[in-house]
Length: 387
Image 1: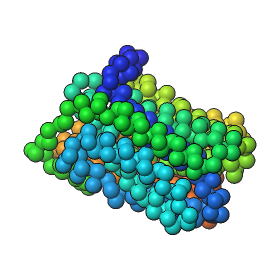
Image 2: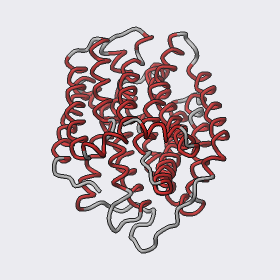
Image 3: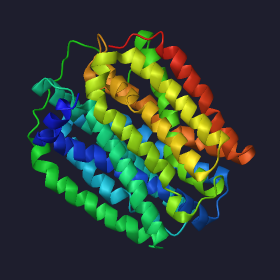
């Protein structure tokens, strides 16, 4: 069950790509934990905060086709490096701006950099799987979760010690750029895949249909759930649980830790239990975890609940991303671009909708609507044939 981890962490190409997954999670964990600080800085209500959060998905979704175009023109490894560097630059911009409008513009640029790196690193991971005849997608997504957890914990500690958010983020951005330079050689050593012109779609967006449509719908539900946890867990811990500053990041950290644990085990357990069973059981665990956090809004029970959510969603994205690369009659780039557009849209726009509902009703009621989506994902997964 653990041999795949030994292979992963002894292979330089896998580690290099894994660092990118870690960085993407790490920086998002930093940002998510600083969302309450951004809210206080501009005296936003929940609806205004939700509108601000719309900036990242606006940049990410609009740039997703461009990310695929870059891969087809300059290659996946150069696109990977470009996205890595841009991520380190763009995350510093929102905290450097004096007004909400300019901060929102910085978040749009951040979303663009997220899109470029996200598509490129998943393409690189898939190429390694083909070239080395191995499975690394689940473990790579586990690296994202470890990054999310470490980012939220580190930022929570920084807030506890009253370090200014902008200076903290500047330091993290410098770290990202250094890591991009450090892993560049190994990433560039990954053989570029030759495009298959006999299948449709290329690297462009293709509207899903048939069984692939069901896979995309599951991705939409699970990514809205993940986005809700990433963007609103810290706010929930602060405003509903009313915990101390040191524990604000613990809900997100628990969620991220158990997500990472599930994904690190995923490449071993997914072949044993099958795609459908993993996704259905994961949905049930996610439902129970979120219900606990909402019904028992105390520090300990909320952290336990969010941790169960992390365990439940852990193996879903690796299965869906893998299936998207194997859709019959569609190029791998086309499947990934399509799934990533809907998935990223759910991950980033879902929390915005939650913000408006929270302002209208309350945050617990807004998050309880995610339980409906979790139920839908369970029902759809029972009828889906994964590739």
